[in-house]
Length: 77
Image (tube, rainbow, N blue to C red; front, side, top):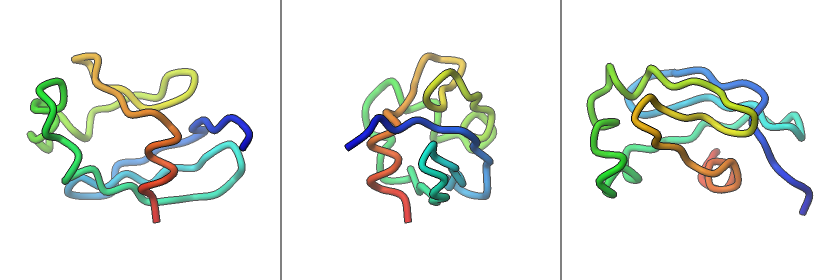
């Protein structure tokens, strides 16, 4: 498998993010069930959740939380 990274990401609603990957596939990742680790607890606040940014390969939040692009690709539909 080639390296996967995120080209674009857009907040949709609840805990869903629309993501365009470098293979030009677009997927919707629902992260609601993936916020149990302490680093992700602030993301349970939807206002905090929707304020992510794109770094060179994935999305990240101001508290340093991020998900690997491979994980987002695999859970995306």
